[in-house]
Length: 287
Length: 301
View 1 (tube, helix red, strand yellow):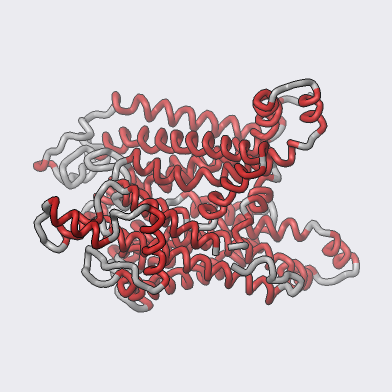
View 2 (tube, chains in turn orange, cyan):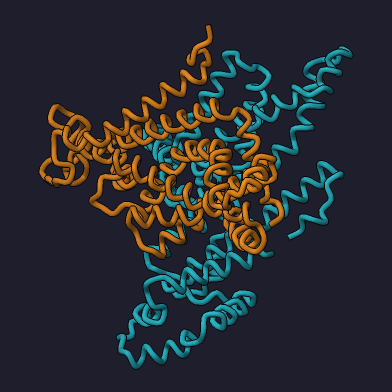
């Protein structure tokens, strides 16, 4: 008898999906569970090693590191979600538009995509974030401005391959409007690879956001953000290694879980996907 | 070439849209009190009252002549500033790339040859860790263990081989993870092909097939990979350079952002674009060296 769980990839998907959900729920309720106020500075208790009162120790301002790491989870996870959501929506919208209508719209958007895609993303993100000023919202905007292109390129190529299928022609002959064809036939048939790309992106986006925060271009102190916390703890490394260990492992574990989740989504939806993404983004050569 | 034009338009637009006024910024940086009369005069002098396209045109002509303006931060020409930091970033990029290939090639091939055996799982596990580790975290861990605990290398980089070691290991760690995966996939795909079966059937030794046929044919995909990842590597240098205080372009631009030094930020983006295009051109040339079937006619920038 064949069941849903015969395929090991599906088991993996269920496990990692559950883990991600748990992580999200946990990050939401964590602020209510922490023992101390994550923002309360207490210089008398600065740089205490992990102890009974402060499970992860305290930072240079005497703030409870445990409380800060826990409350920081929501920032990292949900800003990455929002970021991926934004670039997914914008990128897919533009990609479908260009692919379906072709012509001038296509040329216009694809030139922009070419420029952005052929350029080191982080370099532009740093420049944009630097010009916008710091703040987690600005960091999300900066990264979003440069990363929607992948989805545009991918959805465009998917639409192009679907556009000439017989069922689309049939729908058109049946009198369906363009909007209806796109919404009912084109998008549902091309969403798979896009979802795979999005789930693979969550971990990477989390790292980029934390990277900008680490550079001082993302979250603003005193926000409890992991990248920022690591930056603040950087100079105390020798005397207070816990400032590195706890935010660092929280960051690593979260990214790892989301990466594993992304991999499992890819495995069940499209085992051949990795190759196709190299091909679709391979246009960089003609610089 | 269209890429370079696009990038210059983009950076110029960015500066145009940025909240602060360049004229005001210039005056404050020179310590001149800002009054609306003076401001108006400086604006005129800088051509800020002209339409956008004229401004862009003038700016572009200057850039082509090598004049990128004066850095607010140091008061030196942006061009000189960037040129003096450039070699550090290039050295870092080249050394990490070499390191990555030296590590990733054998690991990726080994992982493919031993598919689904213990070695394969172990290598895949390592590469997964490398991929999920943010660069700054790797950097801090390296500093903690290598520099602080074992006192092997200095915490802050100094120019020279000792200083470049940790930053390039950091950059290489993340890239090796990605490369091992891709190289494994490429080699596995190559091994499935008919000619490998044919060679095996004719009794050619497995190692000979691997070295002389499979690897040779995988080279092209691997070079494509290198071309594709150059961008993310150049971007990653900013973080690594800041952590290790390595005096490259990335460190320079992060400092510049702190000062709201727009000419320098602009200059940085343009230099990176040029660097990137040049590196890509080199990749294309290597393509041709490796596989003469590929003609350059379509791919010259």
